[in-house]
Each structure stands twice: as structure tokens, then as C-alpha cells.
Length: 213
Image 1 (tube, one colour):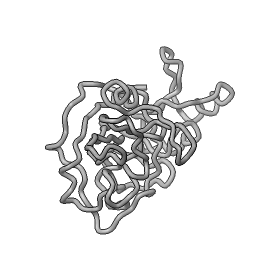
Image 2 (cartoon, one colour; image 1 turned 30 degrees about the horizontal axis):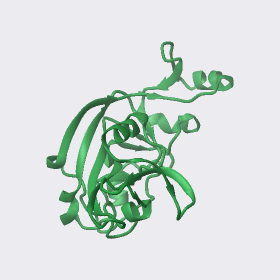
Image 3 (cartoon, rainbow, N blue to C red; image 1 turned 90 degrees about the horizontal axis):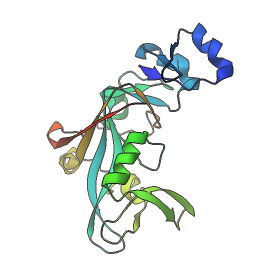
Image 4 (cartoon, rainbow, N blue to C red; image 1 turned 60 degrees about the vertical axis):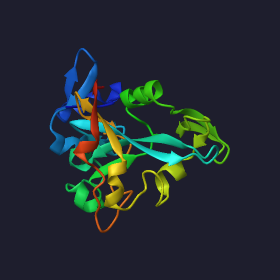
């Protein structure tokens, strides 16, 4: 089940497409993942996550204090992703990755961001490089911002590794989903060949938190 963001003036259109009305939440929703793409204009994201999502945990050396600090990102196994825009059906084969690692400076599910704020050193931080404030990893030792490019984008960054032999350095915190949720991630924005495996069930711990919209 996926909740939609339908403006009041478009409710009749949603109803005509067989969306259903939740009188308690006062929101429209749909139940068949096969046809989610038909409701794309009311879905705030390019993909939809089902079943489970994760916070991925790795480490890096802080550029400022030169000590190790944990860093975090949002993650979804590709088998639990539904591509709304490109409608790829075998996302793992298409991207070469078994898991999508999504930077935390994007629009995160509220429960994921709340968990990061409560349990990690992630916070809104001003970047002198970009002259903007965004939600970011910061050093647990000196509180210095760990720039998104150095955490995610570089080949040797914490979540930019290209080799499956290093995937055991990434740990995962699991969150079960009560309903499907829209994700700020476009399938195919990161593609690799040959394919690698970044996800390992042995590196998963449970959060005992169920997310929902």
C-alpha cells in the first residue's frame, strides 16, 4: 500500500483511477505496486521502497582532526525498490549493485532522519564549499562537517567503493515498513560493470522500529 499526495482539486481524477480513500489519515492510497507508475504525479519521489529499508554505516578519517568517525547513509535493497520513472524491473542487473546507497542530504523518510538525529552525530550543518546548509555527517570527535562528495562520490570514499571485497566494512541497521514509501532516488543514477555485492545479511542489526506514513 502506498499513500499519495493528491490535491483536493484532483481527488476526482484519483478516484477515477481507482485510488482509495483512508478516512482516518485523510489521504488517498493505492495497493497494486504493478501500477504505481500510473500515479507518479502524486508520488513524491522517483522510486518506491517496500518491505525494509536501512541505514548503512561505515567509517572515514576526518579531514580536520585525522581521527576515525562513523558515517551514515540511507539504503534500500534493489529487490525492494520499484522504479516509478524508468520502470526498470530488474534494478540489480540494470545498476550492477544489489543495494542503493542514498545520500542523507536528500529528502529522507521522516523516521530515518529522526533516528539519525537521535542516535548519531548527523545534523544540519553549513558548508563553506557550497555556501548552503544541509543534513550531513559530522565528526564525532571534532564536529567537523564531512562533505557529501567525500562520503559518497569518490571511488575511495566510504560509500563509493567499487570492490565487493570491501562490502563487509559496511554495516546496516534495518527498519521494517508498515506501508510502501516514496524515495528520493532515481534508478540508474549510479551504474557499475562488472556488478558488485555491497549488502551482507550478516552485517545487519535490527532497529525494532517500524516506519510508516
